[in-house]
Image (cartoon, rainbow, N blue to C red; front, side, top):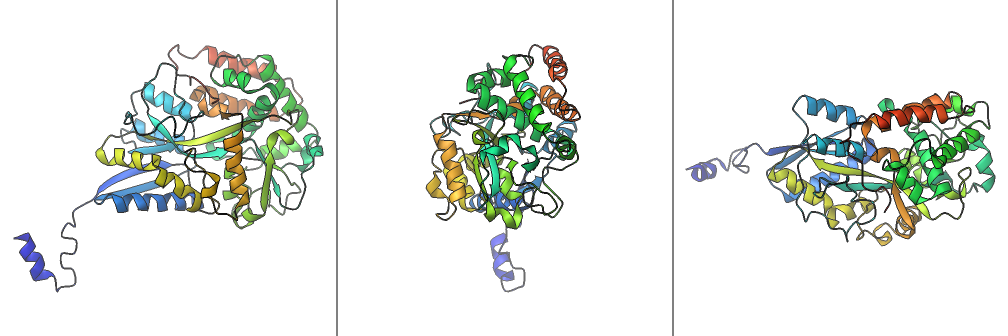
Length: 415
């Protein structure tokens, strides 16, 4: 009867072209990408919708993913899928039974490897997968302007900002983490990031003191960093291309090109060991970060989306779907997947592939309470970078020692 009615109405303006004008299943997705990055992710979600009739994806992008997600979880209305840059939070959600387990075959070790599939100690099931990754042991500069190794001692040349909405301070933790990694090596870094090394241990204290001495090299450097947003001025092209700032180097992840806007093609980079204060210039280990997708509400549609995001098709789309492109941890996405003329992206991929070891951002893998106080103490340290950091590190250590015994820690941070 419905088919006959559709035939009778076919000549009308509405007809039954969508006889199934039935409501589609709506998936809600929360993620950290806004602006151009959100547009790229939206294009990828469009592909998913085309392959899954009857499914619509509503994406919400925010720089305050942790706060928005926590609010939804506490209200009993989490998104179907959330993408977070912090494995420490996801491990905490697993312990609280908030995440849904993924299919066993959704990602394979031989497809990703490295640190990307790291899990908490004692956990065998998989609850998240890497959607997008970034290189953090990197220093940006303007093409045609040689950075020069003298920058190791000249803080005035560096574009540094600690501001980042609710998570201010993390750019400073990136400095400390990378200095520790490049001075003390991956084993010490891994032990510290996974809770096996005390915050008052020599490698940690040494990294803080090295950064403090560097930031003290100019009387205005620390104060300027505390009052500057890491993204640069609103509607600008990041700190590196801010005409009101006299700086030409920036220690920022590979995602920084999304901040540089129209100036992104003018940005080039060197590996951070060449320029970081006190770093071993020959170091071949690299700090990296990732955005990881996890399923908070179980459904066939949510599982299909997670499988799609892990697929080689979706991961390859990062290479050409946005300018500047995203990066993938999937071994099938080689440098040849990126446009031939995009030599910067291809070199970043080589850094991922050729590094002796890759180590996840330490604060991202730490339990939430440790990450928060780490960022707070970074800001407190910058208020007087000449101070001995031991007092601040003892405070972080006390918080660590006060954590419940069942607090989840990642098994490893370095691949």
